[in-house]
Length: 126
Image (cartoon, rainbow, N blue to C red; front, side, top):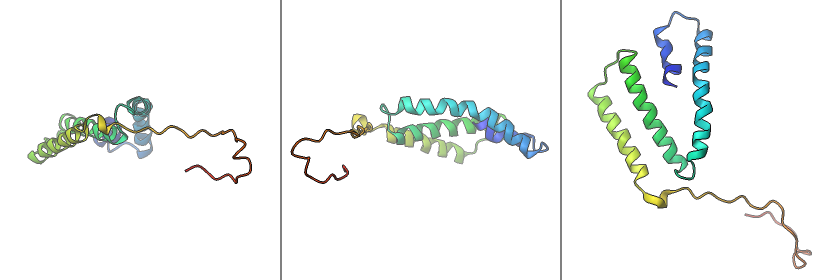
């Protein structure tokens, strides 16, 4: 994703529509992998945990990309920021099993009406 969104900065002379098309061709396969990864991970991780870990990975890759491809050396502020991002991952993951998602079962769409319910008005389930 980083290459798709920032790799074109070295090619500022190229037409913007070409840059957009190439960026999406690079990014689309990653999106195609991210959706099933989130679906498979949800249950072992909460959605919040998945997102924070994904952002930590993304930011780590970006810092390396900016350094190696764009020639932007990380400053001490970048190092401190990355340590805080890692602290966020540790904080969100450090809750134990009580932080696992509570996946709600889908309410049963069909319900048989018993004889005692037959005369009562139906109300939507909460």
